[in-house]
Length: 260
Length: 155
Image 1 (cartoon, rainbow over the protein chains, first blue to last red):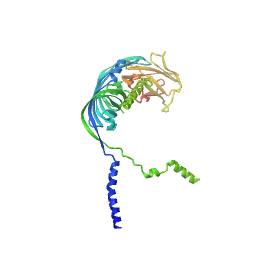
Image 2 (tube, rainbow over the protein chains, first blue to last red; image 1 turned 90 degrees about the vertical axis):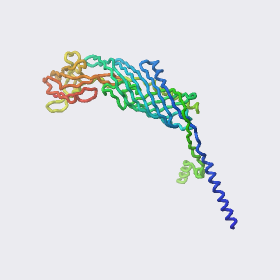
Image 3 (tube, chains in turn blue, brown; image 1 turned 90 degrees about the horizontal axis):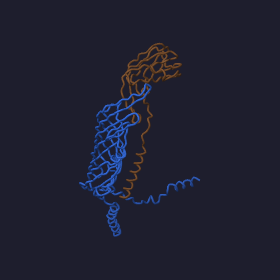
Image 4 (cartoon, rainbow over the protein chains, first blue to last red; image 1 turned 45 degrees about the horizontal axis):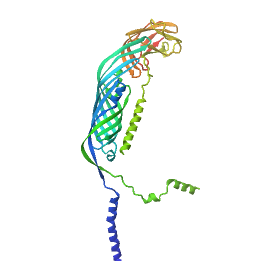
């Protein structure tokens, strides 16, 4: 009998390390991905293309971003806009510089992004310094047509921008991408009665929100590599309950049968 | 993976371009004239009441009537001349003639990209004759495109 107890205890004691080593085997260890952090210098390309088809709007824009880690990069951007518009009752012209600063967040997992792909959101603060004028406008009412003009004035504009889009490395260290941006003007020094039709960097001023679609190309310069731990997806072990549990529909059917 | 991502990139960019190019400028649907909005009041009862008939035109423009024997007109829209700092309107209420003279300053106002510019005014208390008009009071002296009462004509 004593021998039997000793055998059982020693068998159980032998099982314990076996079972614990078995659990570790089911949970794969954290893997590590090497992500290159990059400095990107890019240009917006739709502005010059649009200018060739419509020379009333020139928009030149560039940016520099620096990856802080695999998810976040900081952005500094700027550009120049020259915009004119005319219709049957007025002409409008504006030009000026704009600057942007903010952060971009890559929502792709590091092992998917590989330092080459970016799908995410950007939050930017924009500042524009612009000059605008209305060389002529006319207004007609019962008394007749009155023509007038508004002298040139220079103002600041402040806005916030939320962008979402996609960028991909087409070739080694060369990316293309697009961003849809939603902008909200938060301050303009212009008279509220004489709001500009268009703000450089912001877009049309008549609406409470402005949106834009931009296409970018960029050169990417890797400056550092970091190791990012990738937590593996937990492996779901099939449990006995799931195997034995009847499907909901069939259980309902069963209940119906019982009810009858 | 790389092919899928680039394919998605191109398809999304094309769709977005179509979306952008389909957004053509709209037409002007906003009010573009800043009228003096005048409400008629019966002075005997001090309550709003439309006259039996109203005729309105600019002084010296009697061939171009703004209202011609209009009935049930509770609020008249009176245009001001933006090329000067004053104008006179002739008004005939229930067949009796009067005039109302406005003095004002004028300023430019941007309406929208589609509509362009208009003129706003700031009026002084108007001068008027008193054949049928009892008095004219100013409720709001800034004349804009907004729908708000500017003067009351008691008759």
